[in-house]
Image (tube, rainbow, N blue to C red; front, side):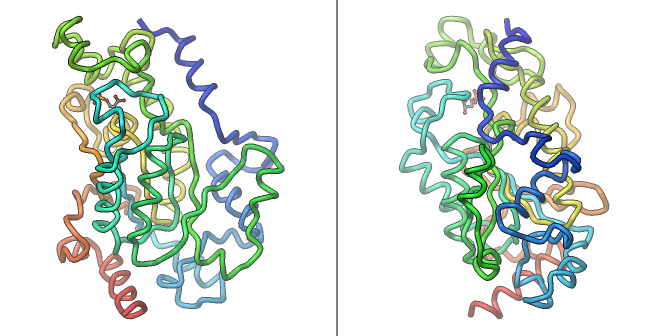
Length: 327
Ligand SMILES: O=C(O)[C@H](O)COP(=O)(O)O
């Protein structure tokens, strides 16, 4: 059975970006992504301006007017489970093993990108694992805003300094990408690397189903969904929800179980209901955050799907501006 020690081992050893309080002594944790963006993109701290979207902004030069525009109480949230990985293809338990996408996974990520290509994205969060990062990057190659996703590095002062962007114009054409270990796949313990079918033959279908889908039962020396939720949902509440409340549109590329735990939080599912929640690889899911509530809007079917843009006036306007700017 999983122990607290094994949980802590994984949570500390997969910490690529160390958001040390000492970096930002006067800021609460939920301001860190904004502050990190300000440091690395050289934004004036006093403006508190998010990265600006010239499509949404009435002025391309005045941060304050854009800030006001962006303080709308509505924002889009897109969740994407990574595309098929080489171990998904082989039907192996993967968990926190860092495995890349297959060719099919690459195609799924590109297809996901087409499906969200008209939905605004101001900020991207991924796990620290390559399959989620590949998915986010490949999806963004399809976005009609044509901005460049840039991974922010906070692992050392030098990494921060050496990755500064000094051009305001270039910064405006960029989307910050924050990689967080807290969004990693659940740690699958002693199942990692084992074949799922063979494991079911050995331990029984029912036992393996409980390890894979129950909320409370952890796989041997691994994380239960509940343990995974403790760090993934806490990260979402502390770092992602404040961005949405600020009016920033967010894309999260993560994993079957870290996203199941976040969806459980967004949709207020019970521990019983979440057992039947299955997420396909490369499938984007859209939520609208408005009046401090999350509204599930399903999966955008395609870039021309009228229904998606009828969800909110703001999305329809964003798409119309893209059409005007890019056509
Ligand atoms: O880690 C894995 O093996 C998969 O990405 C998710 O596995 P699951 O379908 O068993 O939760």
